[in-house]
Image 1 (cartoon, rainbow, N blue to C red):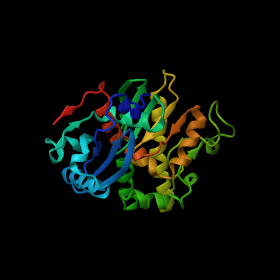
Image 2: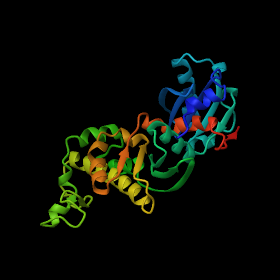
Image 3: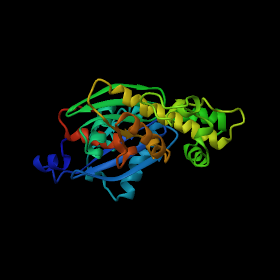
Image 4: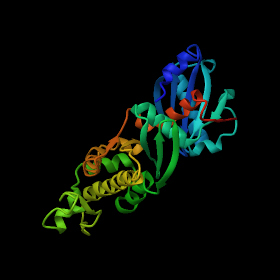
Length: 295
């Protein structure tokens, strides 16, 4: 895996300014800086639209970190909201990075792994395979944070993920999911008694709100985790780097270990997991293999 601190040193760019990576969502923007190979002050800003979110995040980032415009060498944009940005940010040199490449570079940098499936858990879920310097989007599923919010809105009258997570702490997932042990007197080949036979298969009409909350979170996280594992069948990649906002859910520590044990894989949540795409966007500036489009 490239060491970007070494790239900067080897190319005599240690005196260059900071490169800003920005992952522009529709209402949330994530921004980081890279200076001498180090990730500086990840920040998240919410707004009502992507343009407001971008400029609000950029201004706040500069102000909070006491950075002047002339300290910035380049701005790298990615994310679905970047399509709304058609001119340089504050007149600075600005380019757009491919979001899937940014996912791969950011996950690779933060995990220290270079043969992985990157699982980006956003509104839906995208899967990117990294095999050395080869980074390619291999698919995805329409299940993610948007699914969780939509179902919670219908069933629990809230779409606040933090509220849902707090409710789930008090829930009992065995009141929602049907396990192998509920339908079989002995383990099935390759499946322990604790394995889930049917998500929501044991749910009752009078299930508590807390049980519904943990059931919804478990359903989304397990679907994402198992889809990632199944996507790597036929390869020898057995490590998966989970990135995106859903990695912040404490329930990941409940759902992912059984998947790891069942399939003999490793689901890794790296430092700065929610900012990996922004980190990867900035790293695209240093890597000539990944062309970006200047504005």
